[in-house]
Length: 148
Image (cartoon, rainbow, N blue to C red; front, side, top):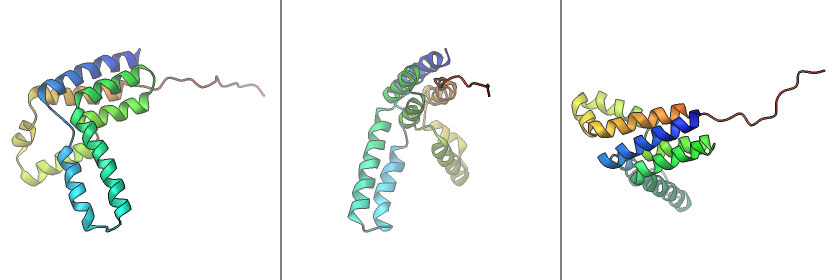
């Protein structure tokens, strides 16, 4: 039942994210890709990092669609993968929130940071958090026996 509710909430969240045009932190991924050559000259590491960051940019660009797909995965009892997809699609997660808080602390301008996303976008982001929270893995393990 919880996973069905998480799916419905993720559909709403995804819809709000699509309508508002809210996406994950694409700029952060691009910044990491630009700055990485300063730390290593290893072509293999740079190529692997570029591939991973490209995947993250694609997932973030699709935004609300990935959130809805993540909700579907939760509904189908692939909770961990679904929560990950929701986080990637909406850009919601601890690193993203820390970045927002850091931006507010540095700029000391709470209103402009909040204004980057419309009310509809923030509603989608908050509902994405809710969907991730509601999703719960089912217990498919064998019942424990207490006999000796």
